[in-house]
Length: 572
View 1 (spheres, rainbow, N blue to C red):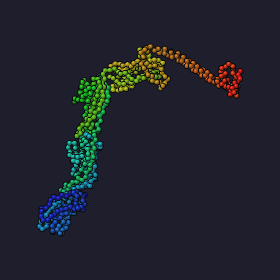
View 2: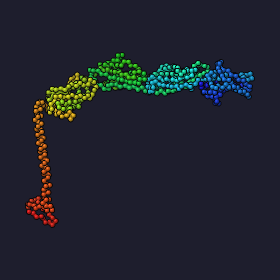
View 3: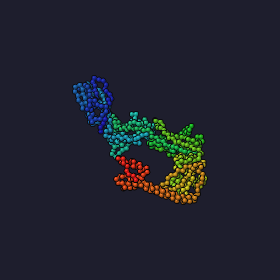
View 4: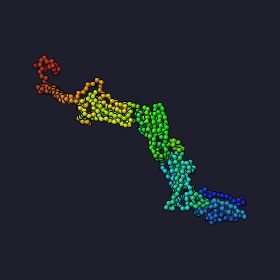
Protein backbone atom coordinates (compact mmCIF):
# COMPACT_ATOMS: atom_id res chain seq x y z
CA UNK A 1 0.00 0.00 0.00
CA UNK A 2 1.32 3.43 -0.97
CA UNK A 3 1.20 5.98 1.83
CA UNK A 4 1.29 9.71 2.29
CA UNK A 5 3.65 10.89 5.04
CA UNK A 6 3.32 13.98 7.23
CA UNK A 7 5.96 14.76 9.86
CA UNK A 8 5.56 17.18 12.71
CA UNK A 9 8.32 18.14 15.14
CA UNK A 10 7.04 17.91 18.72
CA UNK A 11 9.89 19.25 20.79
CA UNK A 12 13.64 19.76 21.47
CA UNK A 13 15.88 18.83 24.37
CA UNK A 14 17.05 21.15 27.05
CA UNK A 15 19.90 23.46 26.21
CA UNK A 16 23.39 21.99 26.89
CA UNK A 17 26.84 22.13 25.30
CA UNK A 18 25.91 20.22 22.13
CA UNK A 19 22.96 19.99 19.76
CA UNK A 20 20.88 17.08 18.55
CA UNK A 21 18.33 17.11 15.73
CA UNK A 22 16.26 14.85 13.50
CA UNK A 23 16.06 15.43 9.77
CA UNK A 24 14.12 13.72 7.00
CA UNK A 25 15.79 11.94 4.11
CA UNK A 26 13.80 11.17 0.99
CA UNK A 27 16.00 11.57 -2.01
CA UNK A 28 15.47 15.34 -1.92
CA UNK A 29 17.45 17.99 -0.08
CA UNK A 30 14.24 19.44 1.38
CA UNK A 31 11.23 17.14 1.84
CA UNK A 32 7.75 18.33 0.93
CA UNK A 33 4.99 18.69 3.47
CA UNK A 34 3.17 15.58 2.30
CA UNK A 35 4.25 12.96 -0.20
CA UNK A 36 4.26 9.28 -0.94
CA UNK A 37 7.41 7.23 -0.49
CA UNK A 38 8.74 3.75 -1.02
CA UNK A 39 11.96 4.71 0.82
CA UNK A 40 12.00 7.09 3.70
CA UNK A 41 14.51 7.86 6.45
CA UNK A 42 14.64 9.58 9.83
CA UNK A 43 18.15 10.82 10.62
CA UNK A 44 19.16 11.88 14.16
CA UNK A 45 22.36 13.92 14.33
CA UNK A 46 24.37 14.79 17.49
CA UNK A 47 27.03 17.49 17.11
CA UNK A 48 29.54 16.28 19.72
CA UNK A 49 32.59 14.08 19.95
CA UNK A 50 31.95 10.47 20.79
CA UNK A 51 28.16 10.86 21.13
CA UNK A 52 25.89 7.82 21.39
CA UNK A 53 22.33 7.73 19.97
CA UNK A 54 19.36 5.56 20.93
CA UNK A 55 15.75 5.51 19.58
CA UNK A 56 12.51 5.18 21.54
CA UNK A 57 9.04 4.79 19.92
CA UNK A 58 5.68 5.61 21.43
CA UNK A 59 3.21 4.18 22.05
CA UNK A 60 4.89 0.96 23.10
CA UNK A 61 4.62 -1.76 20.50
CA UNK A 62 5.20 0.42 17.46
CA UNK A 63 7.53 -1.45 15.14
CA UNK A 64 10.50 0.29 13.62
CA UNK A 65 13.32 -0.71 11.33
CA UNK A 66 16.80 -1.25 12.86
CA UNK A 67 18.91 1.92 13.06
CA UNK A 68 22.18 2.48 11.25
CA UNK A 69 24.70 4.62 13.12
CA UNK A 70 27.72 6.46 11.77
CA UNK A 71 30.12 8.31 14.10
CA UNK A 72 33.40 10.10 14.04
CA UNK A 73 34.80 13.57 14.33
CA UNK A 74 32.53 16.14 15.81
CA UNK A 75 29.16 14.50 14.93
CA UNK A 76 27.32 11.21 15.10
CA UNK A 77 24.28 10.16 13.04
CA UNK A 78 21.71 7.38 13.41
CA UNK A 79 19.26 6.61 10.54
CA UNK A 80 15.96 4.71 10.52
CA UNK A 81 15.14 3.56 6.97
CA UNK A 82 11.49 2.78 6.14
CA UNK A 83 11.22 0.75 2.94
CA UNK A 84 8.31 0.68 2.34
CA UNK A 85 6.32 2.79 4.71
CA UNK A 86 3.70 0.80 6.63
CA UNK A 87 0.88 1.95 8.93
CA UNK A 88 2.52 -0.08 11.72
CA UNK A 89 5.46 2.36 11.61
CA UNK A 90 3.24 5.26 12.65
CA UNK A 91 4.10 6.70 16.06
CA UNK A 92 6.24 9.14 18.03
CA UNK A 93 9.96 8.65 17.44
CA UNK A 94 12.30 9.97 20.16
CA UNK A 95 16.05 10.34 19.60
CA UNK A 96 18.28 10.33 22.72
CA UNK A 97 21.88 11.53 22.25
CA UNK A 98 24.45 11.29 25.08
CA UNK A 99 27.96 12.72 25.23
CA UNK A 100 30.26 13.42 28.16
CA UNK A 101 27.55 12.59 30.64
CA UNK A 102 25.06 14.96 29.05
CA UNK A 103 21.88 13.74 27.30
CA UNK A 104 19.92 15.59 24.70
CA UNK A 105 16.45 14.50 23.47
CA UNK A 106 14.37 15.41 20.44
CA UNK A 107 11.34 13.78 18.83
CA UNK A 108 9.22 13.61 15.64
CA UNK A 109 5.67 12.48 15.20
CA UNK A 110 5.69 9.95 12.36
CA UNK A 111 2.17 10.27 10.95
CA UNK A 112 1.15 7.85 8.18
CA UNK A 113 -1.65 9.11 5.94
CA UNK A 114 -3.72 6.51 4.11
CA UNK A 115 -3.97 7.08 0.36
CA UNK A 116 -6.75 6.20 -2.08
CA UNK A 117 -4.64 5.64 -5.17
CA UNK A 118 -5.83 2.03 -5.35
CA UNK A 119 -9.51 2.95 -5.10
CA UNK A 120 -11.91 3.09 -8.06
CA UNK A 121 -12.69 6.59 -9.38
CA UNK A 122 -15.36 8.58 -7.63
CA UNK A 123 -18.58 9.19 -9.60
CA UNK A 124 -20.99 12.09 -9.07
CA UNK A 125 -24.46 11.91 -10.59
CA UNK A 126 -27.30 14.44 -10.55
CA UNK A 127 -31.00 13.67 -10.06
CA UNK A 128 -32.88 14.87 -12.00
CA UNK A 129 -30.38 15.33 -14.81
CA UNK A 130 -29.74 18.80 -16.17
CA UNK A 131 -31.37 21.26 -16.63
CA UNK A 132 -32.18 22.26 -13.07
CA UNK A 133 -34.85 24.89 -12.47
CA UNK A 134 -35.54 27.32 -9.70
CA UNK A 135 -37.78 25.76 -7.11
CA UNK A 136 -36.86 22.18 -8.06
CA UNK A 137 -35.28 19.46 -5.93
CA UNK A 138 -31.65 18.48 -6.66
CA UNK A 139 -29.83 15.38 -5.40
CA UNK A 140 -26.10 14.88 -6.01
CA UNK A 141 -24.81 11.34 -5.46
CA UNK A 142 -21.13 10.56 -4.82
CA UNK A 143 -20.25 6.86 -5.31
CA UNK A 144 -16.90 5.12 -4.71
CA UNK A 145 -15.58 1.72 -3.69
CA UNK A 146 -12.85 0.57 -1.29
CA UNK A 147 -11.15 -2.76 -1.94
CA UNK A 148 -8.69 -3.26 1.00
CA UNK A 149 -10.65 -4.79 3.83
CA UNK A 150 -8.70 -2.88 6.48
CA UNK A 151 -9.79 0.52 5.05
CA UNK A 152 -13.11 2.30 5.47
CA UNK A 153 -14.65 5.63 4.58
CA UNK A 154 -14.76 7.41 7.90
CA UNK A 155 -16.76 10.37 6.52
CA UNK A 156 -17.82 12.15 3.32
CA UNK A 157 -17.67 15.92 3.13
CA UNK A 158 -19.50 18.07 0.56
CA UNK A 159 -18.18 21.50 -0.36
CA UNK A 160 -20.59 23.92 -2.05
CA UNK A 161 -20.26 26.88 -4.45
CA UNK A 162 -19.09 29.15 -1.61
CA UNK A 163 -16.11 26.75 -1.02
CA UNK A 164 -17.44 26.08 2.44
CA UNK A 165 -18.54 22.65 3.72
CA UNK A 166 -22.27 22.01 3.41
CA UNK A 167 -23.94 21.62 6.78
CA UNK A 168 -27.09 19.48 7.03
CA UNK A 169 -30.20 21.39 8.02
CA UNK A 170 -32.85 23.59 6.44
CA UNK A 171 -32.89 22.92 2.68
CA UNK A 172 -29.77 20.67 2.81
CA UNK A 173 -29.81 16.96 3.67
CA UNK A 174 -26.70 14.69 3.59
CA UNK A 175 -26.98 10.90 3.88
CA UNK A 176 -24.04 8.45 3.54
CA UNK A 177 -24.37 4.66 3.50
CA UNK A 178 -22.37 1.63 2.40
CA UNK A 179 -23.03 -1.87 1.13
CA UNK A 180 -20.70 -4.83 0.57
CA UNK A 181 -20.20 -6.33 -2.86
CA UNK A 182 -19.38 -9.90 -3.80
CA UNK A 183 -15.77 -9.03 -4.66
CA UNK A 184 -14.93 -8.08 -1.12
CA UNK A 185 -14.86 -4.35 -1.83
CA UNK A 186 -17.22 -1.93 -0.14
CA UNK A 187 -19.35 0.48 -2.14
CA UNK A 188 -20.06 3.83 -0.53
CA UNK A 189 -22.74 6.30 -1.55
CA UNK A 190 -23.27 9.81 -0.23
CA UNK A 191 -26.29 11.88 -1.22
CA UNK A 192 -26.65 15.62 -0.74
CA UNK A 193 -30.18 16.89 -1.41
CA UNK A 194 -31.03 20.58 -1.82
CA UNK A 195 -34.69 21.54 -2.00
CA UNK A 196 -36.27 24.63 -3.54
CA UNK A 197 -33.27 25.56 -5.66
CA UNK A 198 -32.46 29.22 -6.17
CA UNK A 199 -30.00 31.01 -8.42
CA UNK A 200 -27.51 31.14 -5.51
CA UNK A 201 -27.33 27.32 -5.48
CA UNK A 202 -25.60 27.19 -8.86
CA UNK A 203 -21.89 26.44 -8.97
CA UNK A 204 -19.37 23.69 -8.22
CA UNK A 205 -20.09 20.92 -5.70
CA UNK A 206 -17.18 18.73 -4.50
CA UNK A 207 -17.34 15.33 -2.83
CA UNK A 208 -14.39 14.64 -0.46
CA UNK A 209 -14.36 11.21 1.22
CA UNK A 210 -12.06 10.58 4.20
CA UNK A 211 -10.43 7.11 4.00
CA UNK A 212 -8.94 5.59 7.14
CA UNK A 213 -8.15 2.31 8.92
CA UNK A 214 -11.03 0.08 9.87
CA UNK A 215 -9.40 -0.18 13.33
CA UNK A 216 -8.06 3.29 14.21
CA UNK A 217 -4.38 3.56 15.17
CA UNK A 218 -2.49 6.50 16.70
CA UNK A 219 -0.56 8.63 14.20
CA UNK A 220 -2.38 7.00 11.23
CA UNK A 221 -4.30 9.80 9.51
CA UNK A 222 -7.32 9.59 7.23
CA UNK A 223 -6.72 10.53 3.62
CA UNK A 224 -8.75 13.31 1.95
CA UNK A 225 -6.78 13.50 -1.25
CA UNK A 226 -9.45 11.83 -3.39
CA UNK A 227 -12.25 14.15 -4.51
CA UNK A 228 -14.64 14.76 -7.39
CA UNK A 229 -16.54 17.89 -8.45
CA UNK A 230 -19.75 18.56 -10.34
CA UNK A 231 -20.93 21.86 -11.81
CA UNK A 232 -24.60 22.64 -11.28
CA UNK A 233 -26.44 25.26 -13.34
CA UNK A 234 -29.75 26.67 -12.11
CA UNK A 235 -32.14 27.89 -14.83
CA UNK A 236 -35.09 30.22 -14.41
CA UNK A 237 -38.39 28.52 -13.75
CA UNK A 238 -40.24 28.04 -17.11
CA UNK A 239 -43.73 28.98 -15.94
CA UNK A 240 -46.42 28.91 -18.61
CA UNK A 241 -49.94 30.34 -18.17
CA UNK A 242 -52.81 30.23 -20.70
CA UNK A 243 -56.53 31.02 -20.57
CA UNK A 244 -59.34 29.67 -22.70
CA UNK A 245 -61.37 30.97 -24.27
CA UNK A 246 -59.60 34.26 -24.86
CA UNK A 247 -62.73 35.96 -26.25
CA UNK A 248 -66.23 35.41 -24.90
CA UNK A 249 -69.65 36.73 -25.86
CA UNK A 250 -72.29 36.03 -23.28
CA UNK A 251 -75.77 37.21 -22.46
CA UNK A 252 -76.76 38.96 -19.27
CA UNK A 253 -79.04 36.13 -18.16
CA UNK A 254 -76.48 33.34 -18.46
CA UNK A 255 -73.11 32.33 -17.02
CA UNK A 256 -69.75 31.56 -18.59
CA UNK A 257 -66.46 29.93 -17.59
CA UNK A 258 -62.81 30.86 -18.06
CA UNK A 259 -60.13 28.18 -17.63
CA UNK A 260 -56.66 29.26 -16.52
CA UNK A 261 -53.99 26.58 -16.94
CA UNK A 262 -50.52 26.81 -15.37
CA UNK A 263 -47.66 24.47 -16.31
CA UNK A 264 -44.22 23.92 -14.74
CA UNK A 265 -41.58 21.15 -14.94
CA UNK A 266 -42.39 18.07 -12.80
CA UNK A 267 -39.13 18.55 -10.88
CA UNK A 268 -40.34 21.90 -9.47
CA UNK A 269 -41.93 21.01 -6.15
CA UNK A 270 -43.59 24.34 -5.48
CA UNK A 271 -47.33 25.07 -5.48
CA UNK A 272 -49.15 27.34 -7.90
CA UNK A 273 -50.94 30.34 -6.42
CA UNK A 274 -53.82 31.55 -8.63
CA UNK A 275 -55.39 34.99 -8.56
CA UNK A 276 -58.14 36.60 -10.68
CA UNK A 277 -58.62 40.24 -11.59
CA UNK A 278 -61.47 41.84 -13.50
CA UNK A 279 -62.08 45.31 -14.86
CA UNK A 280 -64.64 47.12 -16.97
CA UNK A 281 -64.31 50.42 -18.79
CA UNK A 282 -63.94 52.46 -15.62
CA UNK A 283 -63.03 50.30 -12.63
CA UNK A 284 -61.23 47.09 -11.75
CA UNK A 285 -60.72 44.88 -8.75
CA UNK A 286 -58.92 41.77 -7.52
CA UNK A 287 -61.39 39.00 -6.77
CA UNK A 288 -61.13 37.93 -3.13
CA UNK A 289 -62.81 34.59 -2.53
CA UNK A 290 -64.12 33.11 0.68
CA UNK A 291 -63.21 29.65 1.94
CA UNK A 292 -65.67 28.14 -0.54
CA UNK A 293 -64.12 30.00 -3.48
CA UNK A 294 -67.09 32.36 -3.99
CA UNK A 295 -67.36 36.15 -4.12
CA UNK A 296 -70.01 38.63 -5.28
CA UNK A 297 -69.49 42.08 -6.80
CA UNK A 298 -72.29 44.36 -8.00
CA UNK A 299 -74.82 41.57 -8.40
CA UNK A 300 -72.40 39.31 -10.28
CA UNK A 301 -71.21 36.05 -8.72
CA UNK A 302 -67.72 34.61 -9.18
CA UNK A 303 -66.76 31.04 -8.26
CA UNK A 304 -63.16 29.76 -8.47
CA UNK A 305 -62.47 26.02 -8.42
CA UNK A 306 -59.44 23.78 -8.86
CA UNK A 307 -59.39 20.03 -9.52
CA UNK A 308 -58.95 17.78 -6.45
CA UNK A 309 -55.75 15.93 -5.69
CA UNK A 310 -53.39 18.75 -6.62
CA UNK A 311 -49.98 18.58 -4.89
CA UNK A 312 -46.76 20.55 -5.09
CA UNK A 313 -45.43 18.08 -7.65
CA UNK A 314 -48.43 18.38 -10.00
CA UNK A 315 -46.94 19.88 -13.19
CA UNK A 316 -50.22 21.18 -14.69
CA UNK A 317 -53.10 22.74 -12.77
CA UNK A 318 -56.24 24.43 -14.12
CA UNK A 319 -58.24 26.99 -12.19
CA UNK A 320 -61.79 27.53 -13.44
CA UNK A 321 -63.65 30.81 -12.90
CA UNK A 322 -67.43 30.62 -13.31
CA UNK A 323 -69.12 33.99 -13.73
CA UNK A 324 -72.81 34.77 -13.48
CA UNK A 325 -72.74 38.23 -15.02
CA UNK A 326 -75.83 40.41 -14.73
CA UNK A 327 -74.57 43.68 -16.18
CA UNK A 328 -74.00 44.27 -19.87
CA UNK A 329 -70.77 45.75 -21.23
CA UNK A 330 -67.16 44.91 -22.09
CA UNK A 331 -64.93 43.30 -19.45
CA UNK A 332 -61.40 41.99 -19.15
CA UNK A 333 -60.54 39.06 -16.89
CA UNK A 334 -56.92 38.44 -15.95
CA UNK A 335 -55.59 35.23 -14.47
CA UNK A 336 -52.32 35.49 -12.56
CA UNK A 337 -50.16 32.58 -11.37
CA UNK A 338 -47.31 32.93 -8.88
CA UNK A 339 -44.69 30.44 -7.72
CA UNK A 340 -42.65 31.46 -4.67
CA UNK A 341 -39.01 30.42 -5.03
CA UNK A 342 -37.02 30.52 -1.76
CA UNK A 343 -34.11 32.96 -1.79
CA UNK A 344 -35.39 34.48 -5.06
CA UNK A 345 -38.97 35.50 -4.24
CA UNK A 346 -42.06 34.99 -6.40
CA UNK A 347 -42.14 34.29 -10.10
CA UNK A 348 -45.42 35.19 -11.79
CA UNK A 349 -47.13 35.25 -15.17
CA UNK A 350 -50.56 36.43 -16.32
CA UNK A 351 -52.99 35.79 -19.17
CA UNK A 352 -56.05 37.77 -20.30
CA UNK A 353 -59.54 36.94 -21.53
CA UNK A 354 -61.88 39.55 -23.04
CA UNK A 355 -65.59 39.23 -22.30
CA UNK A 356 -68.50 41.08 -23.86
CA UNK A 357 -71.76 40.79 -21.96
CA UNK A 358 -74.76 41.39 -24.22
CA UNK A 359 -78.17 42.66 -23.16
CA UNK A 360 -81.54 41.50 -24.49
CA UNK A 361 -81.16 41.96 -28.24
CA UNK A 362 -82.73 40.57 -31.39
CA UNK A 363 -80.50 38.63 -33.80
CA UNK A 364 -78.20 40.61 -36.07
CA UNK A 365 -78.65 40.75 -39.83
CA UNK A 366 -76.80 38.05 -41.81
CA UNK A 367 -74.23 38.89 -44.50
CA UNK A 368 -72.86 37.32 -47.70
CA UNK A 369 -76.25 36.04 -48.90
CA UNK A 370 -76.07 34.06 -52.14
CA UNK A 371 -78.26 31.63 -54.12
CA UNK A 372 -76.57 28.73 -55.90
CA UNK A 373 -77.02 25.10 -56.90
CA UNK A 374 -80.03 26.04 -59.09
CA UNK A 375 -81.10 22.76 -60.69
CA UNK A 376 -84.46 21.34 -61.83
CA UNK A 377 -86.85 22.35 -59.04
CA UNK A 378 -84.40 23.26 -56.22
CA UNK A 379 -82.02 26.02 -55.20
CA UNK A 380 -79.75 26.67 -52.20
CA UNK A 381 -79.67 29.85 -50.12
CA UNK A 382 -76.48 30.47 -48.10
CA UNK A 383 -75.54 33.19 -45.63
CA UNK A 384 -73.12 33.99 -42.81
CA UNK A 385 -73.97 35.09 -39.24
CA UNK A 386 -71.24 37.54 -38.13
CA UNK A 387 -71.86 36.95 -34.40
CA UNK A 388 -74.48 35.87 -31.89
CA UNK A 389 -75.80 38.90 -30.05
CA UNK A 390 -77.70 37.43 -27.10
CA UNK A 391 -78.87 33.82 -26.88
CA UNK A 392 -78.75 30.80 -29.16
CA UNK A 393 -80.44 31.44 -32.49
CA UNK A 394 -82.46 29.49 -35.09
CA UNK A 395 -82.68 30.21 -38.82
CA UNK A 396 -85.29 29.48 -41.52
CA UNK A 397 -85.93 30.78 -45.08
CA UNK A 398 -89.52 31.82 -45.95
CA UNK A 399 -90.26 31.94 -49.71
CA UNK A 400 -93.12 32.14 -52.19
CA UNK A 401 -94.23 33.36 -55.63
CA UNK A 402 -95.49 36.75 -54.36
CA UNK A 403 -94.00 39.25 -51.91
CA UNK A 404 -97.12 39.08 -49.75
CA UNK A 405 -97.48 35.32 -49.94
CA UNK A 406 -94.31 33.63 -48.57
CA UNK A 407 -96.18 30.42 -47.91
CA UNK A 408 -93.27 28.00 -48.03
CA UNK A 409 -90.46 27.37 -45.52
CA UNK A 410 -87.11 25.64 -45.56
CA UNK A 411 -85.93 23.38 -42.78
CA UNK A 412 -85.05 25.10 -39.48
CA UNK A 413 -81.32 25.38 -38.73
CA UNK A 414 -80.01 25.71 -35.17
CA UNK A 415 -77.14 28.11 -34.49
CA UNK A 416 -74.15 27.41 -32.26
CA UNK A 417 -74.70 27.04 -28.52
CA UNK A 418 -71.43 28.96 -27.93
CA UNK A 419 -72.09 32.66 -28.01
CA UNK A 420 -68.49 33.59 -28.80
CA UNK A 421 -68.63 31.87 -32.21
CA UNK A 422 -68.20 34.33 -35.08
CA UNK A 423 -68.53 34.08 -38.86
CA UNK A 424 -70.62 30.90 -38.83
CA UNK A 425 -71.87 29.74 -42.26
CA UNK A 426 -75.38 28.34 -42.90
CA UNK A 427 -77.32 27.09 -45.91
CA UNK A 428 -80.75 25.54 -46.70
CA UNK A 429 -82.38 24.05 -49.78
CA UNK A 430 -85.55 25.52 -51.36
CA UNK A 431 -87.63 22.79 -52.99
CA UNK A 432 -90.74 22.57 -55.20
CA UNK A 433 -89.71 25.42 -57.48
CA UNK A 434 -91.21 25.83 -60.98
CA UNK A 435 -88.79 26.60 -63.82
CA UNK A 436 -88.86 30.05 -65.45
CA UNK A 437 -90.69 31.54 -62.48
CA UNK A 438 -90.12 34.45 -60.15
CA UNK A 439 -89.86 33.86 -56.37
CA UNK A 440 -89.35 36.00 -53.32
CA UNK A 441 -87.68 34.98 -50.04
CA UNK A 442 -86.47 36.28 -46.69
CA UNK A 443 -84.17 34.80 -43.98
CA UNK A 444 -85.77 34.68 -40.54
CA UNK A 445 -83.44 34.71 -37.48
CA UNK A 446 -84.90 34.08 -34.01
CA UNK A 447 -83.71 34.03 -30.40
CA UNK A 448 -85.38 34.28 -26.99
CA UNK A 449 -86.16 37.96 -27.58
CA UNK A 450 -87.90 37.65 -30.95
CA UNK A 451 -87.27 37.50 -34.69
CA UNK A 452 -85.22 39.46 -37.21
CA UNK A 453 -85.99 39.24 -40.96
CA UNK A 454 -83.84 40.26 -43.86
CA UNK A 455 -85.22 42.52 -46.58
CA UNK A 456 -87.43 40.80 -49.15
CA UNK A 457 -85.23 39.40 -51.94
CA UNK A 458 -86.21 38.04 -55.37
CA UNK A 459 -85.17 34.73 -56.85
CA UNK A 460 -85.42 34.49 -60.70
CA UNK A 461 -85.59 30.73 -61.16
CA UNK A 462 -84.03 29.71 -64.50
CA UNK A 463 -82.54 26.26 -63.87
CA UNK A 464 -79.73 24.91 -66.03
CA UNK A 465 -79.24 21.35 -67.21
CA UNK A 466 -76.41 20.50 -64.84
CA UNK A 467 -75.76 21.46 -61.23
CA UNK A 468 -72.04 21.77 -61.99
CA UNK A 469 -72.72 24.58 -64.48
CA UNK A 470 -75.19 26.42 -62.28
CA UNK A 471 -73.79 29.84 -61.42
CA UNK A 472 -74.42 31.58 -58.13
CA UNK A 473 -77.32 33.97 -58.43
CA UNK A 474 -77.19 37.10 -56.33
CA UNK A 475 -80.53 38.10 -54.90
CA UNK A 476 -80.82 41.84 -54.39
CA UNK A 477 -83.89 43.12 -52.53
CA UNK A 478 -86.79 44.24 -54.72
CA UNK A 479 -87.36 47.90 -55.46
CA UNK A 480 -90.22 49.72 -53.82
CA UNK A 481 -92.31 49.97 -57.03
CA UNK A 482 -92.16 46.25 -57.95
CA UNK A 483 -95.45 45.22 -56.47
CA UNK A 484 -97.20 43.36 -59.36
CA UNK A 485 -97.79 39.71 -58.49
CA UNK A 486 -96.35 36.93 -60.60
CA UNK A 487 -98.54 34.66 -62.82
CA UNK A 488 -99.61 31.36 -61.39
CA UNK A 489 -97.56 28.24 -61.98
CA UNK A 490 -99.91 26.86 -64.69
CA UNK A 491 -99.91 30.14 -66.66
CA UNK A 492 -96.16 30.21 -66.52
CA UNK A 493 -95.95 26.72 -67.98
CA UNK A 494 -98.41 27.61 -70.81
CA UNK A 495 -96.49 30.78 -71.60
CA UNK A 496 -93.30 28.76 -71.82
CA UNK A 497 -94.90 26.40 -74.40
CA UNK A 498 -95.89 29.34 -76.62
CA UNK A 499 -92.79 31.47 -76.31
CA UNK A 500 -90.21 28.78 -77.02
CA UNK A 501 -91.41 27.93 -80.62
CA UNK A 502 -91.74 31.61 -81.51
CA UNK A 503 -88.20 32.27 -80.37
CA UNK A 504 -86.98 29.34 -82.47
CA UNK A 505 -88.78 30.64 -85.63
CA UNK A 506 -87.31 34.10 -85.19
CA UNK A 507 -83.81 32.66 -84.84
CA UNK A 508 -84.22 30.61 -88.04
CA UNK A 509 -85.45 33.65 -89.98
CA UNK A 510 -82.49 35.69 -88.88
CA UNK A 511 -80.12 32.92 -89.96
CA UNK A 512 -81.74 32.75 -93.45
CA UNK A 513 -81.47 36.56 -93.96
CA UNK A 514 -77.80 36.47 -93.00
CA UNK A 515 -77.08 33.67 -95.46
CA UNK A 516 -78.83 35.54 -98.37
CA UNK A 517 -76.93 38.73 -97.64
CA UNK A 518 -73.62 36.91 -97.58
CA UNK A 519 -74.28 35.27 -100.97
CA UNK A 520 -75.29 38.57 -102.59
CA UNK A 521 -72.17 40.22 -101.28
CA UNK A 522 -70.01 37.48 -102.78
CA UNK A 523 -71.66 37.87 -106.24
CA UNK A 524 -71.07 41.65 -106.31
CA UNK A 525 -67.43 41.32 -105.45
CA UNK A 526 -66.84 38.81 -108.32
CA UNK A 527 -68.37 41.01 -111.27
CA UNK A 528 -65.48 43.48 -111.87
CA UNK A 529 -63.07 40.64 -112.40
CA UNK A 530 -65.20 39.14 -115.16
CA UNK A 531 -65.47 42.52 -117.15
CA UNK A 532 -61.74 42.94 -117.04
CA UNK A 533 -61.21 39.50 -118.45
CA UNK A 534 -63.56 40.24 -121.35
CA UNK A 535 -61.68 43.40 -122.27
CA UNK A 536 -58.40 41.59 -122.33
CA UNK A 537 -59.92 38.90 -124.57
CA UNK A 538 -61.14 41.46 -127.27
CA UNK A 539 -58.03 43.64 -127.17
CA UNK A 540 -55.04 41.53 -126.40
CA UNK A 541 -52.60 44.23 -127.61
CA UNK A 542 -53.98 46.88 -125.32
CA UNK A 543 -56.01 48.81 -127.97
CA UNK A 544 -58.79 50.64 -126.20
CA UNK A 545 -62.27 49.83 -127.57
CA UNK A 546 -64.39 52.44 -129.28
CA UNK A 547 -66.54 54.56 -127.06
CA UNK A 548 -69.96 55.96 -127.66
CA UNK A 549 -70.01 59.66 -128.53
CA UNK A 550 -71.28 61.88 -125.82
CA UNK A 551 -70.28 59.60 -122.94
CA UNK A 552 -68.36 61.62 -120.40
CA UNK A 553 -66.59 58.68 -118.89
CA UNK A 554 -65.32 57.47 -122.27
CA UNK A 555 -64.34 60.94 -123.34
CA UNK A 556 -62.33 61.35 -120.25
CA UNK A 557 -60.75 58.03 -120.90
CA UNK A 558 -59.73 59.06 -124.41
CA UNK A 559 -58.07 62.18 -123.23
CA UNK A 560 -56.15 60.42 -120.51
CA UNK A 561 -55.01 57.64 -122.83
CA UNK A 562 -53.77 59.75 -125.78
CA UNK A 563 -50.47 58.62 -127.21
CA UNK A 564 -47.26 60.60 -127.38
CA UNK A 565 -48.05 61.96 -130.85
CA UNK A 566 -51.31 63.45 -129.65
CA UNK A 567 -53.44 61.32 -132.01
CA UNK A 568 -56.65 60.19 -130.39
CA UNK A 569 -57.92 56.74 -131.10
CA UNK A 570 -60.91 56.39 -133.45
CA UNK A 571 -64.30 56.62 -131.95
CA UNK A 572 -67.53 55.16 -133.17
